[in-house]
Amino acid sequence: MVQMAASLELNFASETYKDAYSRINAIVIEGEQEAHENYITLGGMLPESQEDLAKLSKMEMRHKKGFEACAKNLSVTPDMPFAKEFFAQLHENFQIAAATGNTVTCLLIQSLIIECFAIAAYNIYIPVADSFAKKITEGVVKDEYMHLNFGEVWLQANFEASKAELQTANRQNLPLIWRMLNNVSKDAKVLGMEKDALIEDFMIAYGEALGNIGFNTGEIMRMSAYGLIGA
Image (cartoon, rainbow, N blue to C red; front, side, top):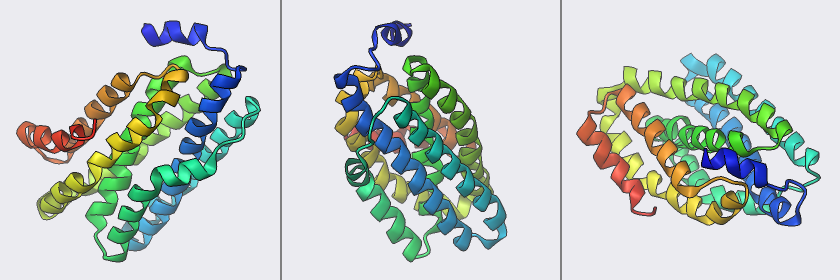
């Protein structure tokens, strides 16, 4: 209700709003580009799933174009250098894992952490978005659940063999999400998105994904706690 009320007070044409939007929108665009590239990479690592991953990759490019249209609708130029720096550490970790053949780590970064983060952000953004962006984002978030499901299904099927690497990858990468979130919390607030709501939605989605894969409640709590270090 607080977010719904906030949307009524937002001035989408104000310079303050557009300045913050230039960074948030760029992050979304870059995130979809990263996901596009990551799914292509995963397709090479998982040849038996290459066709499915290629479809997910193409979907991410459609999302990117949709969010680029959202920026044009508000006459905003996305701050892409900021966005590339925003994703730099997570991007590097994915590339290192891919180069060393750590498929499980790559899936945790892209199919769980990034997708859960995107789902949380989009769900919090939709109630406070302008009408054009709201329609685009509602369509995107439906697809993101499909992407999350791919990672869950594969990791569940390979849970025992993947468990130790998942725990290590979680410890290395989850804290990055909170640092990233802290870097844009002020801009997000200008758009009507509260940091606490983003954290809560992410924790719920990520915890559910870990549970679907096979972790028990105690393990999920311990793994999630690594993220709170940077919150």
